[in-house]
Length: 154
Image 1 (cartoon, rainbow, N blue to C red):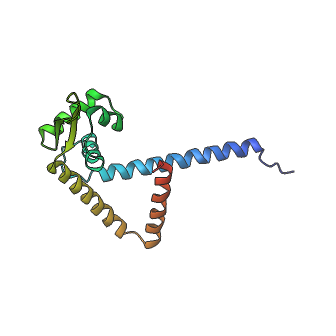
Image 2 (image 1 turned 45 degrees about the vertical axis):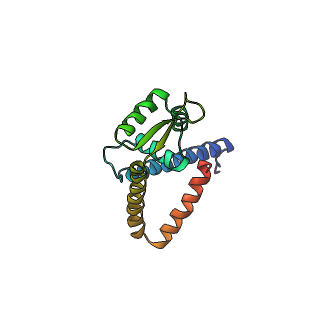
Image 3 (image 1 turned 90 degrees about the vertical axis):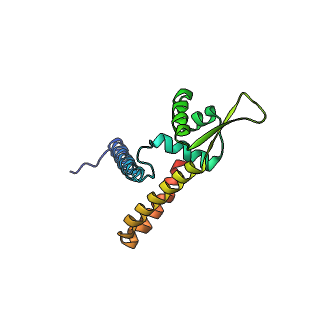
């Protein structure tokens, strides 16, 4: 007499399979992200500093508090990041025209150039890697990118 798996065992196996899939996707995503982050215009710039420049380039000027909230760091931590970027000439602080207590932080042309050059380098690296893949795998990656954006809620 053969015994079949119980419904509880099937559920446990499905949960374990899903957990393993989630782990594989997480690891692959982080490894690719790490490799892409290695392609940068300024080697000494941290990922956090680059993220601030990119945010300012894409979304325009922010206050320190708004930047800290957007990047999910404390205001003192963001202040250190902003100070470093300001000293390097990548951003500026200017008093708000309406509320003089507020200071607006904006990316400079030099900061914009860092963001654009870094994006260009990352795209070029990825284009080179994709060019070595068979067309079917490139299609699969495009489909995976769509799903990843959906999962990320973008």
